[in-house]
Image 1 (cartoon, chains in turn red, purple):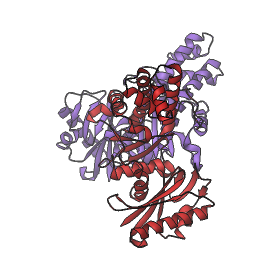
Image 2 (cartoon, chains in turn orange, blue):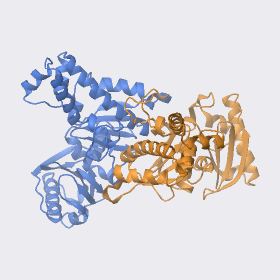
Image 3 (cartoon, helix red, strand yellow):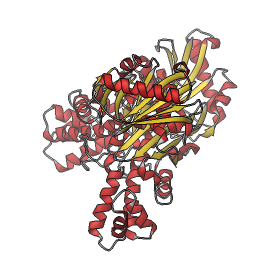
Image 4 (cartoon, rainbow over the protein chains, first blue to last red):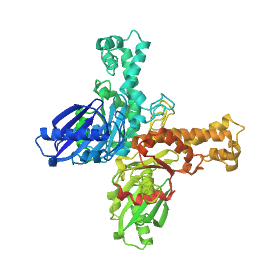
Length: 312
Length: 312
């Protein structure tokens, strides 16, 4: 059988035809245009038809279609999305009028976790988490081989690590996301640049034309003390929430994804691993939670969406 | 079939014969004496034989024996216990030499969760947590109908809620347990008594001969402002960690157990529920995580141990 995975991004819809091994065979990408639930369901169904035809297979050979989207979903129903004004829509029902295969919905962090679990870093584990470090901190959990998704999809970015700390959009104060997202890292970097006009951070930012999640790591690699301090500060907060997540769930592995995870291993993964070994219960009873980099990059969304049906 | 549950406490071993409905039919209690793994396995097996005979059934009618103990276990093996010097012991193997039925081991918070899940507050849920408020903060998780136990047993008491806060025995600073356990509540109460000699806390403590987890609630019920402030402080920290746990796992229900959970509903459960409704993602998408009191009290340990085999 084959599976179709659709990744609903900020501006595009990407669909992929995926085989039993979780390999992408065909990809199709179209701009995201939203008019109504009915029109959207039709667009998605047309996209599924397109990749099916591109792959030279029949609709009957497609076991199901999976779709990853930013927001909250429950089975084949959309509860709300963060980038499309769709609320409480029975999307599977609308979709099947045009392409009569099951439609599984997942949020994007969940799809990343599913993709990594079957085809990436998490292969062979049973208790596995993906934490994505981007605009926010996303989290997808596979526990006992099942996705803790749908209506129970994790919002681990909103665990409080600093009681009474920075105001978060979610209403709480001191959420992990305010200290461990790429957005937070950029904030730390800008603050350090203001306080340290002598720092190499300025030259790095000027060369790249932007202050982003890489600025501090690049300056630190050059030996810049301020850059190193920013990286340490960030790592310390990242590990704080990670250790809480690990203590709650004791997973075999956590894979870090998103832009920041691409940082040099000695400045990110290595010090995080040291803090996990030192501070978490992962080191009790001979069990150590591995912290690794996610492997699939942008493909995780398509692959994970395609394989959603295996874990729900 | 019948099940035997054994609760390993600080000073006693309690064994219960439990039926299919999770009802305790017979109980037997003996003092805890530990000499060696072999002796302990024999004592436990003898206890199983005793309740079997008391119940008038044969060993073949006992599906399995479950045992709840404070520490870390993995399948039928003990990794370490906090009150008995037993480490890395294949307890099931030793046990079956004397009573040839499967032996399931669980830690005590996990057993409380299993008991409440089948016979108490958690009946009918699939994603369910028990949080016990005692000397520490314990946590047992049922996710998708399975116990997140054994080698993956939750240590949610050690999620950090105050970055750089109070030193915890586990090595971290600012763990939830340092702010939400009965121990923490007693600490808040004593501190408030020092600062407020006029408070009714003093009279309550004198009457009861002790400052304990009930002192502040009792004074608050009398209208004492200091007592009320201690309760609010405690509730606020309790809800902080609870909301993090809820955001990570989005369970249907959290049941609070342990001594503190017996506090007056309007001073504990009600304000906690308000903070959960306000601060957690439980209120998104029409899904609200219920916060209730655990129902089984001391029986949870026996019933949960007895039914361990259903969820592992």
